[in-house]
Image (cartoon, rainbow, N blue to C red):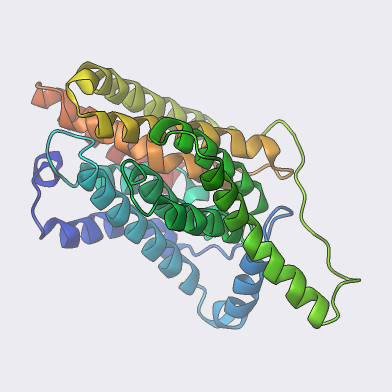
Length: 326
């Protein structure tokens, strides 16, 4: 399977669709109706309210939407990885890895606010990576800021990804105060329109702006979940080893893109610590950067038995966890 997705074959897009369906079949067999969490934004709550009537009669609508989000995120991020030349040649291993590791945790196969904004954050990472030598950087920065501002309407702690703009500007651009202010203006703009809407519709008294709460992230740490975490960490460390070996051979632009991936992961790891709820759903924000690390673990090793063993070990664990895990 890894040999198939190592090739840059357009038919792999369809094969990935089938691959993802087989991995995530249990979520279609046992649909889970998502519940809004304390830190979820009003747009996500509106989305759940709109789906409620359909979901009561056809609960499978939730896993269908979840799968489509995961699949499109996998394909989109894979394309961006190829465009940024993060690996030696174009392939579909990043998309495969994303679908694979998101199948390891049941919470990552439930419609959530974090899953929705993953789509927006993939776009943010792509635009940040293209800032290097971008002659129209101010427009891009404003759009990036706006998307981050809008993402907070789905899940407010995602405001932490504003740090990605700060670090991204330091890494990719010489210091220009106007660019920093424009990015800040982009973040503020959605809130300006929100305040205008709340004021004009006379909902000011009943509206509460979301907040954050610093807390230690907790979740039900079953033996299966701990094993899944160990597998993901092991594959990621293997991938990081090969990334480090090839890092100096890459172009300056590619190195900057890799630095943004690392920064993306650091911000994603920090998100659950500013989240007042205790659920593993929000760790899915880490799945995007981890998928490219794990893709390198499938790409670079010269010993085929290691790559095949790693892949089928994860697949076997996904199947065992889905049908026997609690």
